[in-house]
Image (cartoon, rainbow, N blue to C red; front, side, top):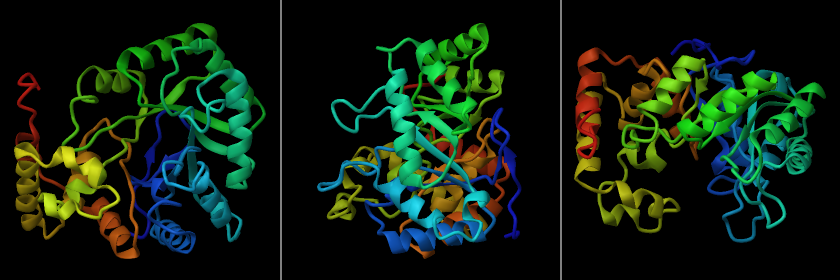
Length: 327
């Protein structure tokens, strides 16, 4: 592949990113610090520049309290060598860190941003995202908190994650009406299997309002890599419970299509699945994680893969949701 992948403008932000973001949810969970450093170095050396994390990662692990992923990224940045200037750094706020540390109220956002900056060992967050909507707080209050952070230079742009079309539309309308910063990006659940939540009203809204879209679980928690094809394949896997729901007739049909297209292109199922996402006009860059250099190199090669219309149609047909015949 080319030394510097083609860059895409990230919505209405000032950032251009390569068509793949590294998902930092694995840092402090399935990847230790030394391996995390190696993965991040390989990623940016290959010409990619966007890293996504969240304050809550990886608090679901026994003994963790959240912030582990940000801390590892911060320690990597602290090595210097121009690392901070080579990446677009995205993190999130809002998920529960503790009973008194959650949501999108003004005071908590300001406090959480300071905590993230400290863990990340940087003076700025390039893209600060509301991890999920908080309907207990007025939208204007949340946006005014972000306005303060942007004015101080601690945040450069804001985005939303896990928002419905109604929630996102209301936030965008409030920004316009009040002259406040607006969500420039959306991070939805979207992949070749999970199509229902994004395709339709939410996708149309993002296209109409010019948002960048950076879907998470681009490989459906690893299912679309093809390594989980039976119940036996789930045994002892950290993501086994998340993958369980994909092991059905439709899921296996999707894997069959990925295998078929991959055979035509000499590509793996994971590469084809990511290339399908990258080919969708509304998508800026999918987020994907890796736990080894070999896995990362495989994902990086997806950016050089081009699907023809017939191959896209094959994947679209195989992944069609029988419960949504209108799609």
